[in-house]
Length: 329
Image (cartoon, rainbow, N blue to C red; front, side, top):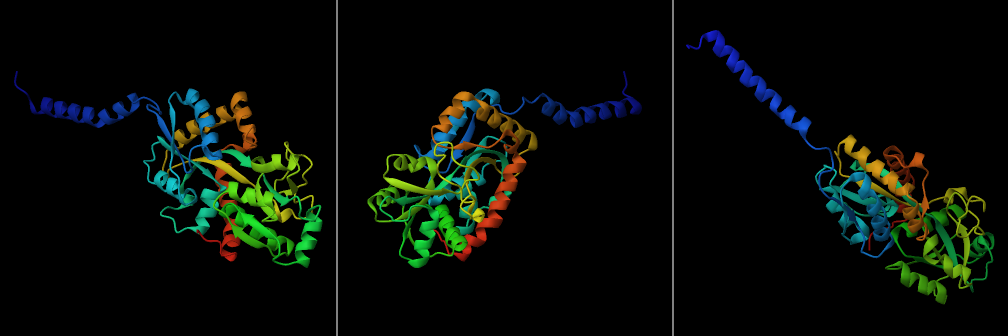
């Protein structure tokens, strides 16, 4: 049979139609995300709070995701090395990053970073870390009011230990809000700073509540105030800074999950769902509570709230950090 011009036109049109719809057909048949294990970058060494928190969350997130969540510890430079590696990962939902107040807010003001902390895609707030002002047991002031009066009468004589750059920033804000002057001493970590606080080498230190509140219970240290909005469950006798008359000092460190810039919204939604499932799990919550961390309400565990928290903290803390000339050591 001869192929007429009309028949030839119809055949060519049919071929082009198949070619045009082939990619759409393949896309429609593609399996839903995720189809392989997910990497969660933790920008601190194994064994620390960030690592233990991430492993507790990852274990429970695997069921709703249907895939393994593998922890990769990439430490150094106050967490900026790990965040830097996460920043260049493909935005496909297979590489996530645990972030916190220090790695995003403080580092953004202290370091010349190779990435823009405002471009990450927020997934969910995970936990909050209440902060407490501790004092050596031999330091004479009995409460925060006596302490401030003493510091005003003895400017620069009270030694304050800075275990991290973020706590240095909080100490700088404390000086500004209370009109006091501290002798700020940098430390390489929480452990040596705590040892010197107990030994009386330094008199004061802002630090996380879970880290050394047990030393208060045994009488080795005193706790003046917490920067949290509410009193701590583990130490309800510690007043808040707002109760003490300094609401401007209200602050907290937080942990959250982020994805690389450009990660699709449907992927973010699935990751947010898995995070909320983990945070609602009784066993996971008990494990996290043992670390002394507090939870956000389900209404706060959203990408939008995490994004708003990041921007608000940057607006608050970046001027303070730069005014106090806090720089990376």
